[in-house]
Length: 242
Image 1 (cartoon, rainbow, N blue to C red):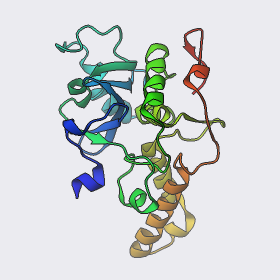
Image 2: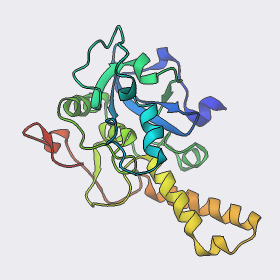
Image 3: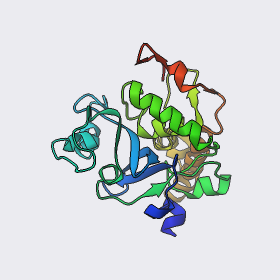
Image 4: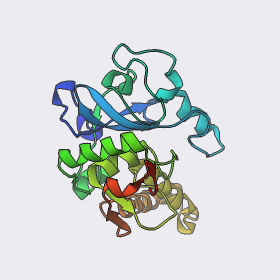
């Protein structure tokens, strides 16, 4: 059941170009990355003190388990990194930080999508691993913009590497399932009919609204996305659009 719900895999099941993740603080949120090769992961990490910008306790929670938080402890494989925030490469052990290994699902069916927990799958299909690695390596050298918990986070980075999809409209939540789930939950709670119902009715209708919004916010369903080559994101070694 755990493997079905959360996509847990063993180390020997890893494939180059896989979108992998591990849970932090129990199942509060997940950290995502792209498996490159030889137990190396390319992932998008927040910078200390300026990464989230929510102005709430969430900033401290996210930073407390960020890889950049523990940059003072050297890894025998990673050694001295040129930077410890933004898009970085690190060994699988550092990426997991003691957590379990999970693989994100692409091309999920509607049934699977709705029964799985947030931020673990998408309707969108994955591109070939050669394209995935090319995007990840270009962004490793040039960055992926400023980290933002709701609009441009580690899951957004991994999904872009796997699909090449970006929004052509500004505003709203990012590509990540975790951000979409938060937005869907907020929409369900704010619904006027839900507020007027009994506890049972509220639970049923609220869950329905949550599922519908989560479904419609998935990048594999949304119409306001386009495929953009990673090379177009970069100009003079600086990211120009995310």
